[in-house]
Length: 310
Ligand code: NAD
Image 1 (cartoon, rainbow, N blue to C red):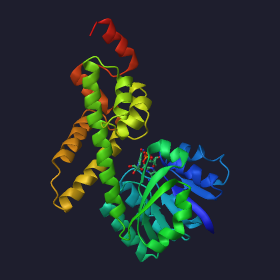
Image 2 (cartoon, rainbow, N blue to C red):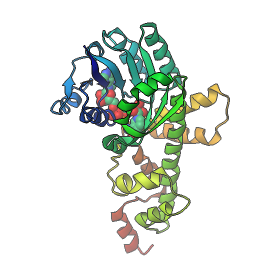
Image 3 (tube, rainbow, N blue to C red):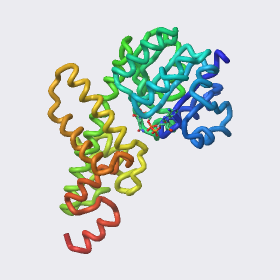
Image 4 (tube, helix red, strand yellow):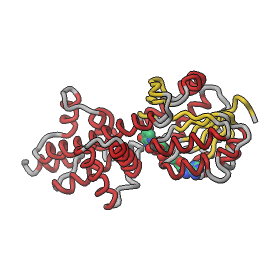
């Protein structure tokens, strides 16, 4: 057990980079992932120790961060049998995942019964932001605890917002952000498909949009990198995007706020999930619009369209 040792659980598209940045900030870190290969990929990094279980992390580290896929897994890891709650060293739990207001509150209450404090700290910026240590972090929880952990969070992101003293409110902020991000992805895909069908060059369209009022996070960050390149490699699964939209819709139910447009975007993703899109990157959502229009947004197809004289 060490007062200075940091724990990190969940070394996926986001967590791998975040854990690495903590290690590279000079802090000793103990990591765990159910996929042993994910932890092994970090084992050669200076300052990293690989643990064999969730409990081992909480037995050794005073502060434990998690970046895990969904509320069920997070609850299990945090407060389930042999979860973080049973660890001997843990005093602070920081959830960087998008787990939803209710799950975060439930976990925080259970951990508090054992004297473990929680910060609700979801992030934005995707794997590129995680890799560069440039995430946006939205934090809710006790202000003194937030102040005490700010240095650590600075290793992950430079835009850190203290949202509320009430654990769960940062989750609300995050799912509102993600509804907008997914809406931008869907409507931009629909619009660019239209343009390409009508004979416009997709790269040029993105340049024009990014210099005009139609620009958004999909056109600015994702179209050229992951869609026009046909790599679909942004690093955010459609099933996670859908989970976040559903969490946002739960908030709208709770506060009885009509969300006609948000419901449609969520429903569109529900359709995509039924067609098998869950494990695909969320940038691949454009394929549905392409199928309906009978074209593909990619450099090679531009030449085919030109050749057909369209
Ligand atoms: P991911 O699926 O790539 O990574 C999750 C990791 O958790 C995997 O390595 C998995 O093996 C591990 N895991 C699953 N169950 C586990 C368990 N019981 N014990 C230990 N490890 C376990 O997901 P991600 O894209 O890195 O996202 C993580 C969280 O961050 C999610 O809540 C997501 O919504 C959120 N998020 C993702 C992005 C993004 O762009 N990818 C951006 C912001 C927030």
